[in-house]
Image (cartoon, rainbow, N blue to C red; front, top):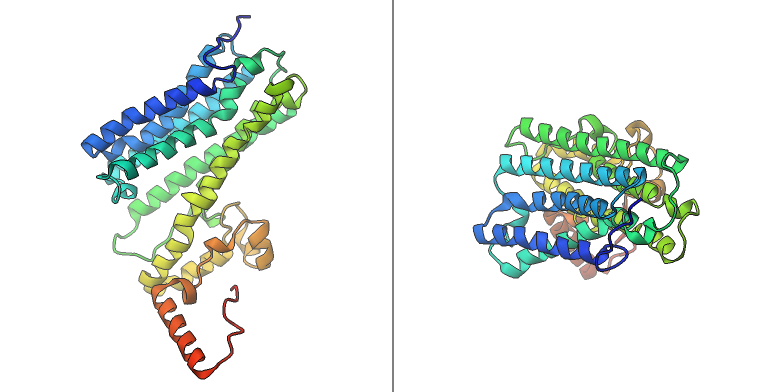
Length: 341
C-alpha cells in the first residue's frame, strides 16, 4: 500500500487552510467587483468538496472509511450548494448582503467567516485522511459505530434536504401579501427547523465514523488526540446554527414580525410555537403539554429564542415602559417585572 503524501504538516491542516483561503478570496473578488450574489453559497458548499477530494487523493490508497466520510461530506456540500444556488437564481439577490455588498471590509468579513466554517467543519475528514492517522493500522469498515454513523447521516441528510424543499415549495405557493403566514407542512409539523436538526446530526455522524480508528484502539499518540479534537467541527456548526446565524435570526425576530404584521394569524402562530419542538422532531400533541422546564432543557428551546409581545414587540415595549412610568409615579409594586413567561 502506498504511503500518504506529506504536505506541509502531518495532519493536512495547513494545506487545507491555505487552499480554503485562496478559494474563498477568489470568489470574494468576483462577488465584490461585480456585486454578484449568486456565487457566495456555491463557493462555500463546493469548498467542502474540494478539500475532501484533495485530502483523499493525497492519502494515495484510501480505505473504505476514508472513502465513506469523504463521499458523505461531498454529498452534503454538493446538495447544500446546489440548493442554495437554485434558490438564489430564483430570488435574484441575497438580502443578507444588502448592508455589506458595497463595503469592502464588512463584505470581506463574511467571507473570512465562511473560510473558518469550511475549514473547521471539514476537520473530521481532513484529519482522518492525513498521514498522521493513516500511518497506523486501520480497523475494517463496518463496526457498530460505523453503521450507526451511516444511518444517522442518511436520516440527517434526508431531513435537511426534504425540509429545505418543503419550505421552498411552501414559500413559492403562499400569497405574497400574507405577512403572517408560516410554514407548518411536512416535517415542519414536528419541528420548527428540521433542516437545521438534520444538518447538525449528519455532521456528528461523520465525526462518529471518522473517530473510529482512535475509538477502537488502532490509533494512538497525538493522532488519537487529533481525531477526537475534530469534534470541534460538528460543535462549531451546532453553535453557529443555534447561537449565531440560524435560530437567533429566525425565532424571536420571526415571531416579532408575525405578531406586528400578521394580524389575525398571530394566535395560530403562537399555538404553533407552543406545540412544535424548536429543533428535535417530536409529536406536537405531546410537546404542547410538556413542562416549560423540559422544553428549555431537553428540547433546547432556550430563553433567547422566546418571544414575549410585552417585552419584545415595538408596541408592547412602549406599553410596558409606559406602565413602568406609571408604577414609578404611583409607587406601585414591581415584583412582577421580568417574570419569564
